[in-house]
Amino acid sequence: MKEFELKYGCNPNQKPSKIYMKDGSDLPITILNGRPGYINFLDAFNSWQLVKEIKEATGMPAATSFKHVSPTSAAVGVPMSDALKKACFVDDIEGLDDSAIATAYARARGTDRMCSFGDWIALSDVCDVTTANLIKREVSDGIIAPGYEPEALEILKSKKKGNYNVVQIDPNYVPNPQETKDVYGVTFEQGRNDFKVTDETFANIVTEKKELPAEAKRDLTIALLTLKYTQSNSVCYVVDGQAIGVGAGQQSRIHCTRLAGDKADHWLLRQTEQVLNLPFKDSGSKTASAVRRETTPSTSTCPRTMKTSSAMENGKPCSPNSRLRSSAKTRERTSRPSPESPSVLTRSSRSLTTLSVPTSPASPTSPSPAAPSAMTSSSKPATTWTWSWPSPVSACSTTKLREASLFSANRTPSARVPRKKRELRSADRKGVYKL
Image (cartoon, rainbow, N blue to C red; front, side, top):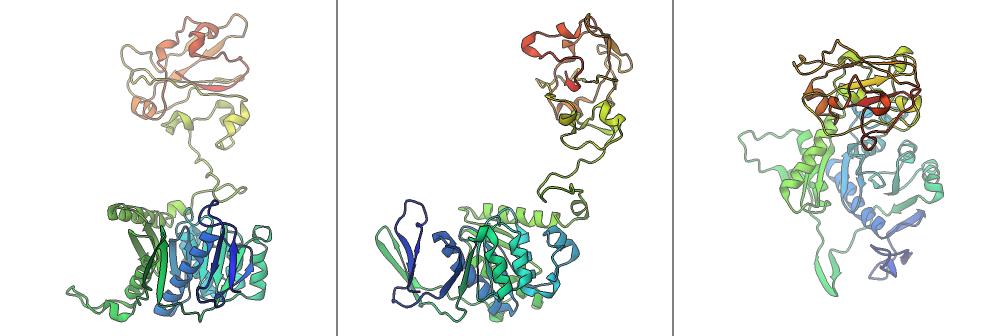
C-alpha cells in the first residue's frame, strides 16, 4: 500500500488528508480492520516506537495506552499481585498470569483508567487471545502490534460493531534518519531522536552508594522512554515496571509534577484494603456508585444520610434512591443556615420518628430536645412533630438549614410560613423537612 486516504486531518475542516511515504515506497503497515484517522495514526506510530524501544532495552514484552499523542502509562509484563489485579479490574481474566503481553497491557490500561478511556493500544509482541479478551471489554479506538493470533484477530474485529481499528506493523521497518515537518509553509528538518537507553546511561552515579538494583534500572529505563514520547513538559513516576503517573503537556514543570504525583497517589490508594473492599451493587457497571454504608440515625452526622421511619421499620438497607422511590416527588428544602437553631424534622403517614444525631447542650433560648411540639390541622388528623438539635458544625457545615424560628407550635401546617418560602405537602406524603 503506497498511501492511505484519511477521512480528514487533525480537525474535520482539514481536508484532504492522507498518509504516504515520501520516497514512494510502501507503507510499513497493514490495516486489518477499521479506518483509522489522522490522530489515530499519530498515536499508533508514536506508541509503537515506545513499546519497541522498551522491549529492546529491557528484553520484556511491553504495552502502552496512548491518548492524544501521549502515553497514559507504559508497562512491561511483570506479574501482578492479587490486589493490583482487583484494582485494575482484571482479577477475572483467565490466563492472565500465563500471558506476559496481556499482563503488560493490564498494567498500562489499569494505571489511569479515566485518561485511557478511548485509548490507542500498542503491543511489542504478537497479540494473543488473552490480550484480545482483555481489550474486547474496554473502550478503545484501536491497536497496533507486529502480529495477531487468528482467534485474537477475530475477537478484535468484533469490537465497535466491526469497526474497531486493527493495524499491523512491520517490526523490521527502520525510518529515515532525517525527518521533516512543515509549519506555516516553512519546512523544519532534524535528525530523528534515536536516543537509546542502556546500562551505560546509568553508569555515572553521583551518590555515595554506587550500586543500582536491576529493578531500579528497569524502572528508570521505562520512565525515560515514556517521557521521550510524552508531550513536554512532562514528569513520570514508575514502580514495578509500570508508569503509575504521567504528567504531560503542561507549561509549568511544577504542574506536571503535581499532576503525575496525584495520579500516582490514586494508583496507590486504589490498592488499599479499604478501597478494594468497597461494596458495589451486583448489577450495573463497575463505575456505578457503591452501596451506601449502613448507618443508624444515632450515628449520622449529616442530614442527607438519614433514613425515613418507614425504611427503618422494614429493616431494609437504604439504597441511594430508596427515599425517592418510597415517596414520589419528595424534595428537600434548603436555605441559609442558622448556627444557632438548626433542626431536622421527619414526617411519615404511618408513624413519626425523631432522627437522633449528635447533640449539643440546648441553649436557654432554644426548645429542649426532649420536649416535642404538636401541630394540628382542621382537615387532617392530628400529626405529632418531634425534632432534635444537631451540632451546628455537623449539620450546618454540610447542608443549608432554615431557621427553626419559622416554625411555631401555635401554627398549623397550612399556615406555618409564607407560600413563597415553602410548598404545601399533602398529609399522606413522606419526606424530610429541613428548617
